Image (cartoon, rainbow, N blue to C red; front, side):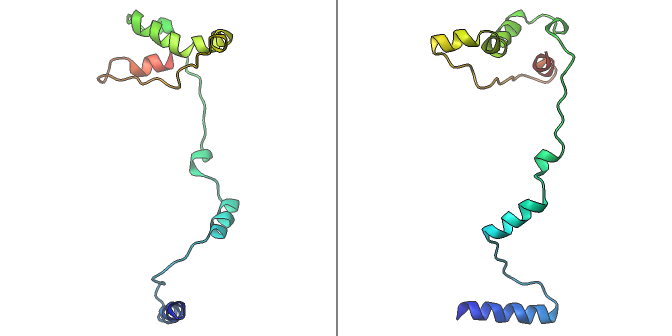
Length: 108
């Protein structure tokens, strides 16, 4: 009975030129929509390799060494990591005030 009332209300609203007050979406609606659209995160995927090297980073020897251990060693010494049963870090968090070379180090 409630469903009939909703349908009647929608029909009346359509006759008056008004938008319906309720909207029902189903999984089938999403499946149909996915077939005709692309996720916005996949539309513009661009990958660029920066031309920055460790030589461009002045000073900060301890930070550079730490970053090299965390980022480069798991690739260079993958066999050793596996042999020792050590899993490499999943990520690196660089923090600090603006202008302290975080972005430069990430590029290097």
